[in-house]
Amino acid sequence: KAILGAWQKDVQLFSTFSAFLAPILIGIFPWIVKLPIKELQEDSTAKKVIHMIGNELLQEPPNMDGTDVFSILVRESWEGKLKPDGKESWITPHCSTTIAGFETTSGSVQLTLLDLAQNPDAQARLRAELVAADSNDIDVIESLPYLDAVTREGFSPFYIPSVRGAHRVAIRDDVIPLKKPVMLSSGETVTSIPVKAATYNFIIPFPVMNSDAQVWGPDAHERLPPGSELPHGPYSHLSNFIDGPRVCIGWRLGQIKLILASMIKNFEFRDTGAKVEKYMSPTVQPFVNGQAAQLPLQVIPIQHY
Image (cartoon, rainbow, N blue to C red; front, side):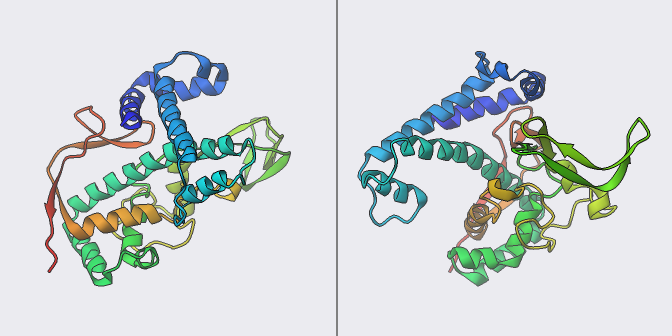
């Protein structure tokens, strides 16, 4: 409850112009993060709560039959297999994963439900696929082609990606090759960019990469029909999950598919006619009349016989 309350305040604050400038200023003046800025305090509230919960989990008797990562690590803690600094090294990344993962997932689910509510034929086709599969097994759910298409379309250029992009700093000197030569103002033509370690902060802009007409064709900015068949695999037409040792662990979209499968199979979603606007605040959020955390939909239970 505390995390949700802090996040909702964070979302509303990030919709202001000052919040738009904040990341730019922090990039130029990193020491700003130490100032008592309200947006940063809300984020800190969520982190403190998650740290508290993590410490409590490590103190409780473990679930000996649990196979999830939390149960396994708690068992290792009780068995003394974690190093003295292991507990903190376990809590910190899970704190980041929880904060970064829960809202990007929920935002994508919300906008996908809105799209399906506005496209009842696509929703009916998806429901028919789910009813025919009649399974809650993750392997079966992930193999459903139309569910995969609908889920990936929720990340398409027609929508705002869950996050604006990713920041990366080189840990060693390297050279980035360019697809096409670029002529500098000096008249020199370059085919690559030398990069020194810990010097440049590279911003990977997901919306730009997902809608580059030179890569995806002249219709890159056009909306695909709901549930259009898209390439499968970790990349498809998306850059949202990046790559390498820090690739987003959610690239398989398993959690989103499970949520959508359960909801679409058991409920019908209808559009209410409300004007829903999408803002990056700080992840993609539906706004109604300037207010965050709102998505008016008519929800009708479905009886299965």
